[in-house]
Length: 431
Image (tube, rainbow, N blue to C red; front, side):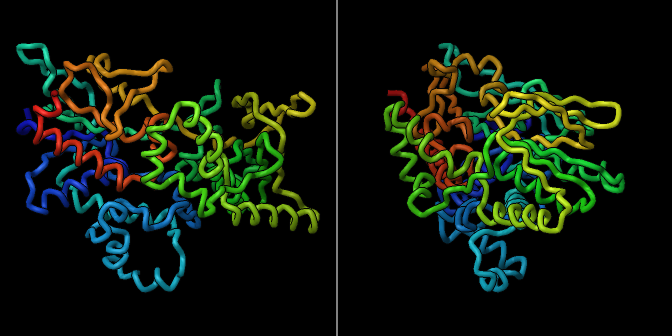
């Protein structure tokens, strides 16, 4: 055992568990009963969507929805404190913009992670989670085995917070290669084609990442054709109007959690256009302007292959060959490209996949999804006394903010509050 039994072991150290580490730091610094933690991250250092940190890409949420402000507006870990530390506070104010560059927000996350580096272990792969049973067969703790290089370490914990994030999703039957990319690898893969004078790129998808990839490739490769393939007539704008944005409010989580299943489905259908398969209107207008300009000048490099879908893609002898089907006629044609970029989104990893035998004690609903309490604690067999908290994978219970930054600060405050309350009142909780 590497250290005494911990209150919390966090699996993953992305923005959500980073926000929790900041909340713990503030809690411990306030003089209350300390909460002991250890966050295990498989990356060698903090990183968040590095492959899409495009120079001109901006955040789609206000800087006030940072890691701490909605929970504690006076926090020393706010984006404003970060700006002050970097000597850019006045410059940012003069910019008159609520939405920082994505690269700047990533730097803010990195700065925040440095403030709580004592809670995190990087380059640590979680190998197993083993239940620790008492004489009555109750599981009061778990042993988390991780590997860092050639070193194995075990942490015993009374609570787990799973923040393993999202996984890139490729179309069914498609395998990534040097010619077939997911947008999450865009910046990592671009060096492979720089200097090769690519003739054509294909970008599949209709969301923000797809539009950003199209704009980036069109700008960076001025001699190349860029073909956007999607099933709509055009990119749809994100609904970021004031009333629609209430779906991201903390109060909306309470309402969604208590709503009947039918209402939950309706709310997700009504407001999916606030986040899914939508694009910032400024970027839509910019891409339309580019395409129209090319038509006027008689050299069309930006092609919109709309009302269509890619049904397959494979590496050929001289490029990737994509099969494109028209949704109107049903006809399929082939299109060869130097690179096919799939902006086909992400899927939530099964949060219980890392739990081993402990997963069998965690309840699921009829559709196989985790059953989760309002405090983000998984509903479990009574024998499991360990708290299993989920940062992600709770969209079906807590709404659209489950995997988004909008409500992160509030969510981690609720998780920390639950951990502290249950630790200090075990008899009440057991009853």
